[in-house]
Length: 198
Image: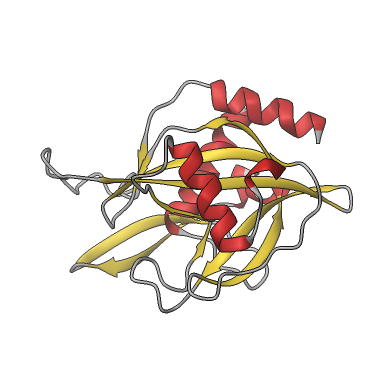
């Protein structure tokens, strides 16, 4: 994990700005006066039998935003959250029972704007000790891990599209086994992979 730590820290410090769900759709003109809500997610890397892996969840199909999709633990900033790092750690604790004290926060990536009107800050961290994930039934249908080598390889990403609001919306995807990782989650992971490839 020490090599991964060094690469993640270098990626966090690399140049590069914000990303959006519209990166592959330059014809979309976003209103300059739009109001975005703050959110944060935790990209938590952990050692599983000697292999670095990243924690992901399958969101509950009952959720208002992104139901049934693969996502990082995370959510909108609450008034009691002093920082967006606090938001990500609180949400991870609520959703998957990951104690904040069991995460070494390495830093954050630039915010990502989602189609649902959030400016989402990815928090990068390392899980210090083994823990037993427990899904919060109302938010999380499943918790699983994916090899870091898979999602940090830009060659594994492809661009696909779906019809959205009457036109084609293009997005990144990086499937793993039965898990279809796409949209904002794939975009954030690709951004991290691009930074680590430099």
